[in-house]
Image 1 (cartoon, helix red, strand yellow):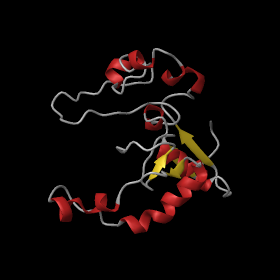
Image 2: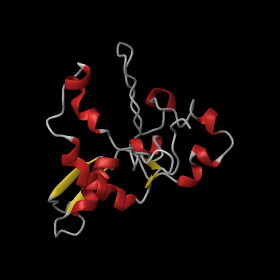
Image 3: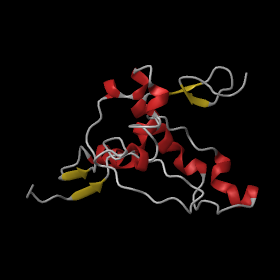
Length: 159
């Protein structure tokens, strides 16, 4: 492609796709680059009986185990955190089955409340309009009848 672009977005995961969508009606020329390809939802593990086994192969959270052509090795031997990523359109949402729960107000104040890490420089209320826009766009968040939390489809809280 040799046409000039105004905006180059690296990655078509949740954030990159949201930025591309938010700019779609502008007159700008937007290019979104993704390391992997489009996924076929008909081949997702949830469509077959072997979905649990596929967690240890082609849909492993570890690119080292998954070993798709678009994956790259990650050395997390000395890290307590094991990365969960996916190289393809949708990015990590492919692994999380597009489940993106809202943060809680306390998540922004972990230093103040729990004495760990740092507080965010913004608060929950600053992001509420964006959470609501995301909810409207995806139409996936519904209020749980039992606990009134914003929970996708069903609530995982104890009864």
